[in-house]
Length: 494
Image 1 (tube, rainbow, N blue to C red):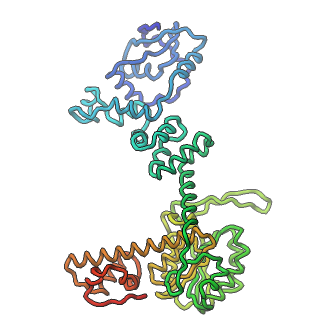
Image 2: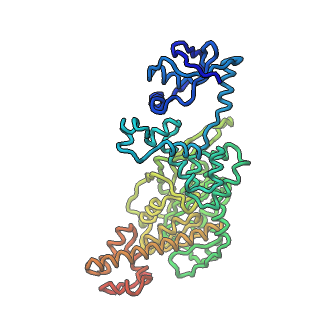
Image 3: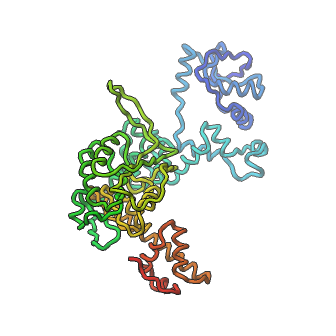
C-alpha cells in the first residue's frame, strides 16, 4: 500500500457520483477527535478516487494543508471507485447497533451534548447515529429488535428481508405469528416484504377465524334482551319467533358489494313486515349501489333522510368507469346512512345529518362501524326497552349499542365466526359494565358517601355513557357483599 501525504490544494476532485455530502461538520469533529482512520484514494497524478467527504471535511472545515492518501494506479477513476464500493459492505442493523453502542459513553463528567463531551472523546447517541448516517429513532428501533426479537427476526432484519421499522412493528405481535411471517420472507416478493405487518395481521385474523369456527354457537333464549343468531335474515323470524310489526327500528350495515343486490328486495319486504307503525329503517351503505338500495326500499317504505358519516383523517380510493369505459378514481371520505320509515315516525324529535369521526374502529370486524355513531342512531331513533333488529350483524356493534342503552336486540349473520365473535363481544362488554359498576359502588362506600341506588346508578351511567337502566339490569349480577352496600333495594330492570 503506497500511503503518501498529499497537499490538499493539489488534489483534483473532478466529476463525482456522490451528490449528497451529508453532515460534514460532524465528520470533521470526528476526524479531529479520532484522527483520519482511513486515507483517501488518489491516482499518481492526484485525481481523487474515493474519500470525497473526508477531503472536504479536512480541507474546508479543519483547514488541513496535507492529508494521507493511498496512491494507486487504476484504469479509470470510475473503475477505482467501483472497486472501493464493491469491497465496502454496508453495516447490518445489528452491527450498526453494536458500533453505535461502542462509540457512546455514558460515564463521563459533563453533558453529552456539550463541547466538554466531544473533547473527552465521548459522543451522544444522536451524534453517534449521525456519524453512521441514521436517525436516533431508527437506532432505538433496531436496538429493541436486537434485544427482544427472536434470532430469526434479527437475522431477517440483518439480511434486509424486512426493514428496521417493520421488524420493530412485528415485535408487538404474538411470537408464533411473527415466526410464520419470518419464514415466508425469503420467498416473498419485494412488495410482500414491504407489507409484512399486513401479512402478520392477515395470519392473525385467519387464526382468529379458525378459532371462532371451532367454537360452538350459543342459542339465546327468547327472553334474553340481547339475542345473536346464526342464520340468514330471511330465516330470522322462524328461528326466533319474531312477531310481525314488533320492532321499533332496524339498524344495520348491509354488505356494499354487488353480491348483496339480489337480496335488497327481500330486505325491504322484511323491514315492511317486522317494523311497527312509525318504525325506522337505517342502514350504512356505500355509494356505488346506492340507487339500487333506494329503489328497493322505496317500494315498501317512506323516504325520510340521509346522514353523512365523515372520517376526517381517513378515506378509501374507489375506481369507477364512465360511459365510455374510462376508469377514474374517487377518494371517498364519507359513508351514507339512509333512513326510511314505515308511516309517520313516532320517536324522532331531532337529529343531525353529519356525524364526524377521527378514526375508524375495526377491532371486532373488518367492516365495523364506530360504536359512538351506532349509539347515536340507537338513542335517536328508539326509546329504552324498544326492540331493534340487525339483519346483517357483522361485528354486532348495534347489539353493543343496544346493550349499553337498554334496548332489546335481535340480530343475525350468515357467517358463523362473526356470530361467535359477536357473542364474545357482548359477554366482554357486559362483564366490563358489571366490573365498572362494582368499582363505582365500592369506591362510594369507601368514601363514606350515601349509598342511594338511584343517585349512584345515575352517576355511573353518566361516567360510562350508558343508560341508568343498565345498572338496574346488571345489579343482581354483582357479588352479594357489593349489592348489600346499597341503602335502598333497587330490583333488576330485567
